[in-house]
Image (tube, rainbow, N blue to C red; front, top):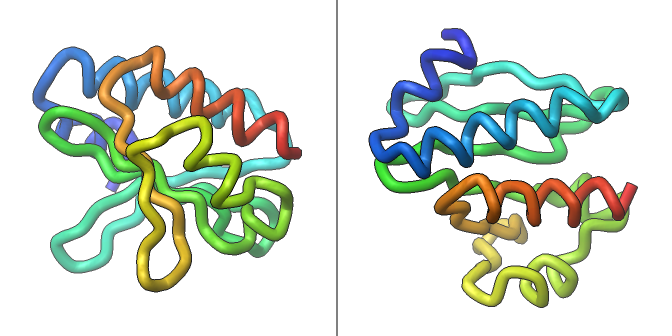
Length: 118
């Protein structure tokens, strides 16, 4: 699976713009690597820093779910910072912070948050 195939899961133009902005912004962060990842019926953009899986993005019809995983939280992207910036964010049972990004502006805000944390 390729990253371009993940984008195809986005239906709305706003969701496509959010996904495009995430890919562009994450690609500009030199310490991160990303690739399409498929597990069963769920496909995601997997973002790694070294050996650690730090972020994920799951494209959907009307937006992209951005996940801040525990290794990123140890690196400074705290659940408190994410929920302060995105009041609709939620924390999963496994401790990942999930944010729905509905458009490119939301994706840009998310990128600024995670890049500022290191």
